[in-house]
Amino acid sequence: MDITIKQLGGVVVVALRDAGYMESTIGNYQKTINALAEYAGGMDQLYIVELGAKFATMTTSPRTGKFSAVRRFDYGRFVRVSNSYLETGVVSLAVTKRGGGGARPVGHDFTALATAWEHDMAQRGLAAQTQDYYGRLARSYLVFLEDQDIVDLADADGASVLAFVESLMGRWAATTLYGIVTNFRPFLKFTGRTDLVAAINMVRARRQVKTPPVVDAADQQLVVQACATGVVSARDASITLLALVTGLRACDLIGLRLADIDWRGHLLHVLQQKTGNPVTLSVPALVITKLAHYLLHQRPATDDDHVFVRSIAPHTRLADHASIYTVIDKTFRAAGVTGVKAGTQLLRHNAVANMLQAAVALPTISAVLGHARQESTNVYLSVDEQRLLQCVLPIPAGARS
Image (cartoon, rainbow, N blue to C red):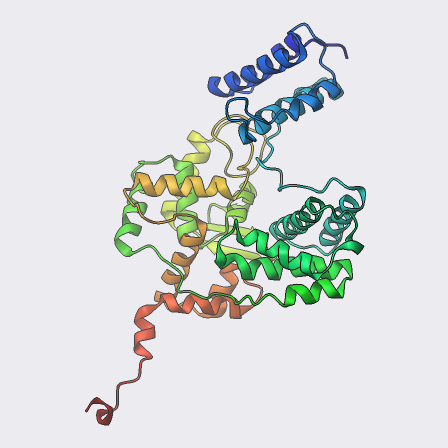
């Protein structure tokens, strides 16, 4: 298909407007089209895949002389849309995640190894989030080796593993060390290199168990009141209340489908994505009411059967954990609750605290949370201060003197 940059830009802009995109987003697309035309030598130049590939690499800001994540996202987005139109004759506006899962190795051997690791994880049925984290660490290590001019795993040694972990600690919080070690080790075992596994085992990383933070009763009431009185949209209220009451993970809130709601029984039937365990959750009347209001009056018209969809085009399911965090944080701020890192993890802790105070049995809490092992639930016992105080033994009379 022969098409000029001007013609291609016009097709894309029309598709964006037909899909209901905001004018500010269309304006960003137009800026990218103008930048492409300037790079190619004019609007009348033909657009070809090779031109798009070269343009997408122009990620250095001329103003700062440094890498620009905005350029990478905007240019890459337009090139993907343009290439899809050349191939299919249809403008594909599918949402892609910013960042794309981190850096990837470029060498043939390392690319093949990373692909084999991803295939192995998928074959074993690991949860999507687990595959993402394991894969990201493995690819980061291979990219680290390439940066050291190592292109064959046979040339890597235990010292490279330790140096890689040290490089991450320069960018990641110290509290993540345990997670880095435990989530990087499976890949090293997959390579069959026992010396690399021995090296990661040398890293002294202990799991830090802290008392999970919870929302105090007064702030919790403010949030519920904001959701009930319409201070925030019915969608945002539903997401926040579901996280607060049920402790659902962000991935399960994103994956919730219309058929999962039992309106008569006020129940949710959820297949938890992390564990694959089915669970049925009771939902309070307020949450059901907000869900119904959202679906009947505020939810955009879309063929997507996920309950929660984007409020701006394209009206598809929410993209990732960050989308849920943004919704909950926005609700907390609207309720006047500040000074807390509001997200599903905090509200998950809160749901457990409420269940413990209601004397719900630990096996039941474990099932609701979707823990593969009941022992994982024990850390939440520390949030029930009143019952912990009842376990404190009195000081013997002789010890007081």
